[in-house]
Image (tube, rainbow, N blue to C red; front, side):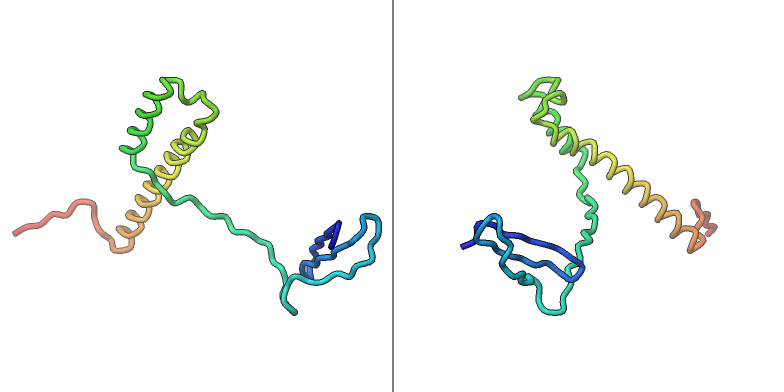
Amino acid sequence: MSKRIIVSKSNAGVSVRGESFDRNTLGSQKSLLKRGKKLLLEPSVIESGMIVKPDKITSITNLLKKHYREDWQSNDALSFFKNAFKDNSVVENSTTESRQTENEDVAKKFCFAETLDFDI
């Protein structure tokens, strides 16, 4: 039984040592990783790709106004909704801008004119 558990991380890996007394350091360290494996902690950023439709935002806003009155945005318990609506508008604007630039790039690539005239 261990009173104290010491976890240490180095470039070689993660090791754990258990001590049965608080003041002594007698135990030997054992690695948590398989032999020859290294621990690489470089988490990647996950971008929010979920876009909430404007109709849903208006209906949720109406419900919040009914239950919490017009000043629901000042309620700290409802900060999730306030942040979600704010983040959604940023994501929605950036996706529409990126779609417009993609469409312009495709039009330039294939040399399409914006208006086409046909004579029959």
